[in-house]
Structure formats: C-alpha cells, structure tokens
Image 1 (cartoon, helix red, strand yellow):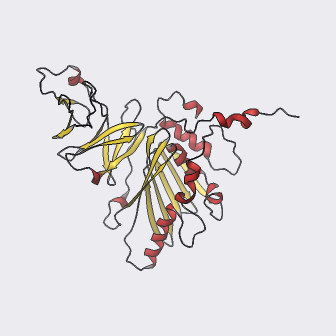
Image 2: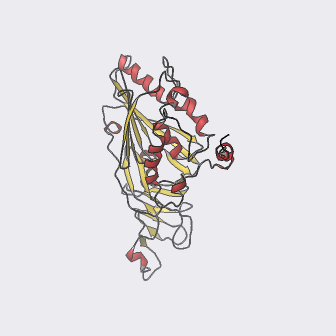
Image 3: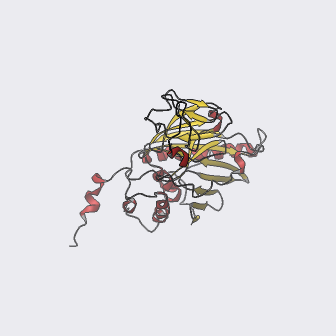
Length: 335
C-alpha cells in the first residue's frame, strides 16, 4: 500500500483564511460627490485609517491621520485651510503631497520639511466620479494608469447606479472568481461551463466569456470592468473593491448602460442584465454573486496548494499574475 500524504488530510486546521498582505495598486477611497471643498472624512481601508479631504480649490488628498509633529489625529478636530490639512494640536499645515507648508510659531522650518514630504499621503486621481488612491507598502510611485471607461461619463448613458457589499475575505479571493469558470455552472447554475478566452498583460487581465456575452478587463487588484451583451444590448459593471483589512473587503460596483426609452425591448433587456449581474433575474436559470457567492467567500479558507483537476480554470496562472501586486512582502512565496 502506498504511503498516505497526511498533510492533505490534516492540513486544513492550520490554514489561514487570508494569508495575504494588502496589495499595491489603485483603490477606491470615496465618491467624488460625497466630498465637498473644505471637507474631510476619516476612512478605514488598506488596513488602516486615512483622512480624505478636499481643498478649497477642489483638489482631493488622502493622508495618514497622525501628525508628524507630535502624533495628533488630524481627523479629530483638524481643519481644511485653503488647500492644506491643518492639525488641531499646533496648527501645522500639510498639502495633499505631504509637504509641511506652515508652522505658525516657527521662526525657521525644520530642515527636513524643505527637502521632502513628511506626512504619508497617497497619489490621488479622480475618474469615473470616484476618488482613487495609489497604495504601495513602501510608498513607491504609481506603476500604471487607470484606463478610460467612456460609459461612466457619457451623456448618452444613465447615471451609474451604485451598490456595496461587505465581505469577510481578502480581495484576491474575490477576484479569483473571475477565472473559476466551472463554478459558474455548479454554484451559479449556468447550464454549462462557459467557454472563455483570456490573457494576461502586465497589470491587466482580459477575458471574453461565451463569445462576447461577458467581456472583462481587470486593471490591477482594485478595478475591473465587465460588459454584458445580450440581443445587441450592453450593460456595463465597474467593480472597485476596497481592501478594508487583511480579512475584510467592501465590494463596490457601479452599473450603467445606454439610455433606452421606457417600455422598449432594449430597456427590458438591459434591466434584466443588470439584475442578473448581482442576483437572480426573471427567465434566467443562473444567479448573480449576491445570491450564491457570499456564503462561499465568507466561510472559505485559502489553499495555497489547491488540489486541482484538468477541468479547472487558470487558477494557478491567475495567482502567479496576482503575486506581482504583493511588492515587498516576504510571505509571497507562501501564497
């Protein structure tokens, strides 16, 4: 009798649910229309608190909340002065790039403030009506740009509808669903395992499922665009999941489509497409993620060495691609 590998029998009790660090990339911070000039908010994401603020000129910034001076939390009593974030303790002021711009009682600024930023901030862009911050564990600059999504700003498209769903797992576990084609039959109830063509290109993953029914583009870990087409009508889903902690994510999505006159066939098709992305839709045998994926995500453990068969999707290829986003991690070989 062959020797039994007991690791595969006994290993699950020692598995971590989420052994991942926070990946680098562009991540959603806040909705643009939720932050007025002169406002600031405390947000929890990327495994810590941040302050998101908008200067009087309209420029947005995202910073670490703790003042480099004596560690006061600037989100608790701080204020926006012009385009600067002002600490409540001694009124030191910082711009959106982290430079100290004013100390009201200093006759000479500390020399380091003349040479470099002293407050951790994130590079920020606003696209698609969203405030994005570039996160890197060692504060390296952005390695790629966010793509254009014409539908999100076009007057020919409806105002995007937004949704959010808290999930008790890491962002990689959510994203991996995009290459797990068999689960679309066995969990979602699709009649067949969908045929898919895919390729990886730098920080981008492209997929075309079911001959153009679902065409997706993932750009880094924090953005994915899916366009669903049926009967010549297309609906767009933009997914921008936030890592909240290492073991908690907030799935966030925007849905839009071309404006179709009420009561038309096109209006009915696009409404069905959007409903089907999220949950169940009339006339469909399969279900969206809200109906079936949540219970899996909230309770599964990650297996770094999964037992796979020849019919599984490109799980290992996807994981190898995703590892590029764990810059500077000394645990990368284990995941």
